[in-house]
Image (cartoon, rainbow, N blue to C red; front, side, top):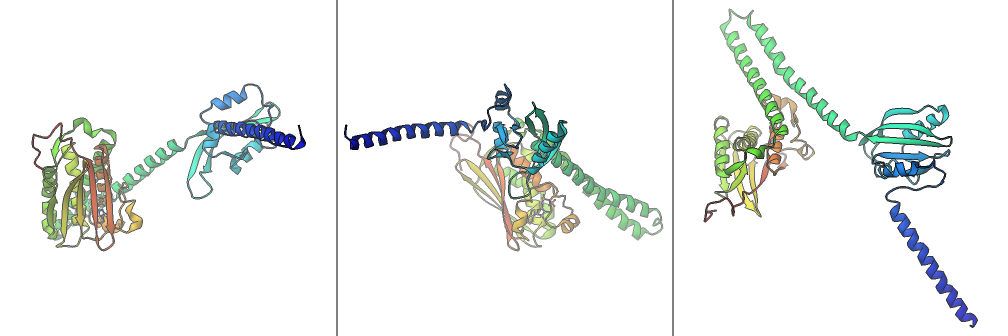
Amino acid sequence: MDSGWLVLLSVAFGLVVGGGFMALFHVAERRGNSAVDVVNPAVPDGVGQVIDALESAGVVLDPSNNVVKASPGALATGLVSQQVLVHSELIELVNRVRSTGEPVVQPVQLARGPFGDASMHFLVRVARLGSRYILLLAEDHSETFRLDEVRRDFIANISHELKTPIGAIALLSEALDPAADDPEQVRRFAKRLHTEAARLTRITQEIIELSRLQAADSLRSAELLDVDHLIAAAMDQNHVQAELRGTTLVKGGAKHVQVFGDESLLIMALHNLVGNAIQYSLDNSRVGIGVRVEDGVVEIAVTDQGLGIASEDLDRVFERFFRVDQARSRNTGGTGLGLSIVKHVVENHGGDVRVWSQLGRGSTFTIRLPEASTVAIAPQGDSR
Ligand code: ADP
């Protein structure tokens, strides 16, 4: 064989061997998704398998703090990257255990990523593993922590909301006694007492409704409902308020549309939207309630030409107790619970609620619900 052929043969051989290694490398890299493997293979027997089987984060570190083994959970939560621990808080714990020899169990709050304020909450255990290694186990408690925070916030908010009218009632009732000889004063205090008591009743009712909604599956009592009827009832319930403010309520759009659901809950949701539209508009304004059906989705839009909501507040209006203008809304008797009730009601019905709004131009709140299946349910010759 001449030397030209020899060169070609060697190149081909080199390519085959190189390709094979590349393929092996690729497969090994893909496997690496399930666990970061050993830099130093001398991890004590069985520890590797245990770490592989862990759902939570488990990491073994060598004397230079290199990660020699990490569970998939440690990678997924971002505790380990490039075979080192990412968070200095964890490195400190590891160093402490290495120097004292004493195991540590400690709750630790860690940054979720390189940017932003979001954090994760772990219960971390660190202990020596043989004479060379350190074992770190971290259980992710972030979800439990978040739920606790929501509950704490809710309780703090409720207490605050209840304290205001209760305090006012206490003061007014005290003031009544010395004013007994002044009928004018008595009448004034009695009127304010009535307002505060009504406010207390409203908050209590809304809190009860909200907890009922959060606990219950409303569709257990679902019946076939006529959307026209739901809107008429909601408009009727806001009739007095609309008249007082000189607001014209106008209904338009598709007719004879049907949805499945709980009648009183859906009326309450629409009532809250129409009530807000009147409340947050100037006197003698116009509020429209329109119905549309598209691809099996019923859209009920409540539109006003009122104050509107600033874009930075739009995402928050469905939160419990959120009010754009705390002071003004408190004066108008708002509890900040109305829209979170709407959100829960429609979500329990398999729908959602969206808002469009611009300051000074007005708002449109749109409830979307699945249309009741007309094939199975509606009378023959649906008249829509
Ligand atoms: P509230 O009992 O205070 O009305 P909601 O949960 O119903 O509570 O509404 C939350 C806040 O969203 C209100 O305080 C108000 O600032 C704002 N908001 C709701 N609906 C409208 C609307 N149609 N136009 C302008 N602002 C609104």
